Image (cartoon, helix red, strand yellow):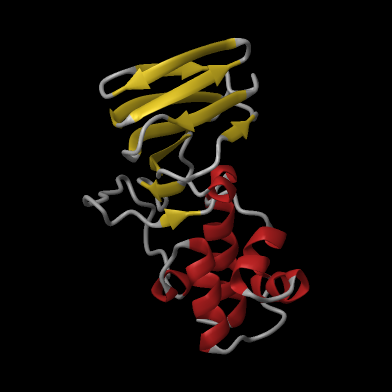
Length: 184
């Protein structure tokens, strides 16, 4: 495996996490230019830098040197073993556990999302569709002009191009299955 292959794997993991070059470089403690050169195979990096990038992406160093032998037809993610992924809500403190990060060409990005007491209110707007299934906790949602509360067992499917907000209610963490769906 050469620098170009490692760089391409890093780039694919970053894109799958929908993390920008700037955001990933900042989290890894390197410059955007350095990360770009690593991803394009222009430079070889010390293990310490690769470990920092892996940490920034919620990945493992072994993910960078993995060689695909055949396209996967499934991804099995065991309880608590999905990689932590950087998403828009990460800046509010939200934790995204990727549930299908290694599945090629996926149209749905499923996450186990956790909001902890003390996390800021998140405000979002993006393309596609979004599906939410509350597993535990109590969250106030605003979608466009409407505001409502969701608890365990509640479902929500909506057009996320509408401005939407989430705010934890109470002192118990909220966990929900959140699926970002590519619009065709």
